[in-house]
Length: 282
Image 1 (cartoon, helix red, strand yellow):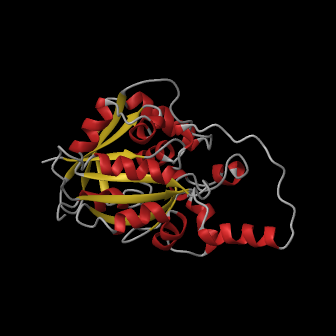
Image 2 (cartoon, rainbow, N blue to C red):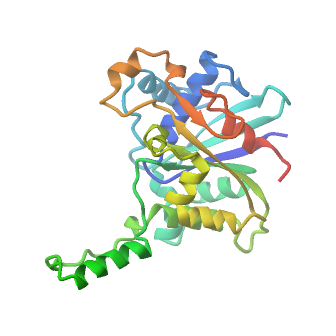
Image 3 (cartoon, rainbow, N blue to C red):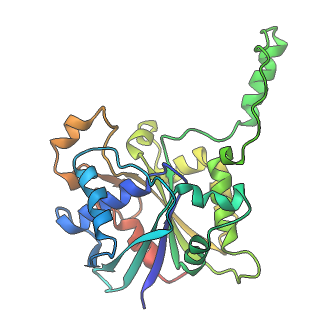
């Protein structure tokens, strides 16, 4: 039986760069991987374009325009022979924001999410905090009490649901697929912190970084262990910051410029999170 997994995340969370790097990793066989490709995708031309840009160390652009097609390919775990279909929606990342921002969801996204046995969820380390902590509010009030001039008044920004924080969007997305009339079921969720080369300078392991920098999402998952079994991975699929590091990255073998940090993950094996999420032990 083929296990279905969905790769999800809001715009600029690193999905396309990861899938380009993963495909190269599996096709080139430059590094040892836990998974292998079973066959080529029906969307092979699209994947080729993503991979070509990634190899050339060009920015892998996110999807533009409105489309409802899906990029999918099949992989097999070498150790057990278990197979999985990976689904990446070739549509605007805004589609993953719709459940919270509009109260609606595209039928294709909803059906794929509900049918998924596991999920790979992306968040970009280059994206800052969504929240303002209580102690930070206190610091602002203390500054005012000390006689520090208040900032000049400005017209408040009109509320736009599209500006809702990333964590709120992701929590609502995860809640949606277990909400009535659906019957809740437990799934494996691999959280991928993309642009890990930026985050690792803080000296934190991925799970600790996740708890400190994505507290709302982390707490939601910690309090819903009946629905989600979670592992957190840090992934640098590009290997550096473009265009700043392009010359250095172009001098490296493509699969060796990647980096992954997480449970049972070899340094360059981007298939590790997917392999972990394939397990069916709940």
